[in-house]
Image 1 (cartoon, rainbow, N blue to C red):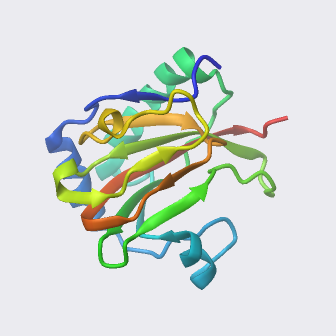
Image 2 (cartoon, rainbow, N blue to C red):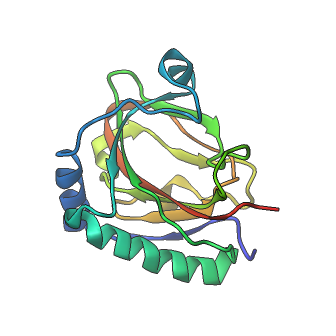
Length: 189
């Protein structure tokens, strides 16, 4: 591994971000889960609304194509993981109403019944920073850590190993929209 994170400033254009938001808002909203937790157990760790983007949905094929392009480049230049699969991508909404947030967590489910682990997390910032206050994505225990200014521009994509602890600070004004994809591969050994 040559780095703990990488980002691409304004990878998606403003128009593409707006297109993704408009299309995703047509999908059915769901309450998020955390591992096997649901309901109030989840709300202690995470408050948000999610919508799932499936690869079979032709409206979103361009998102999958771009995520795979990014993965190949970033995995070659930074991480070097054996990655074989991209499950449904999560469109996430963090609203000021409940001061939506996601407390410290990692994205790998170390104990699972599948043959894969999440290895690389990609987060795309869809909202312009002027649309909300709070909502900072913080990577924990990495050095140097990315600054908010580096990763909060609309269309910017950040990638990091899924085992890196991270959190999203409460949104106190407006709405923050993002995409999250988890590239998976054979279990870590």
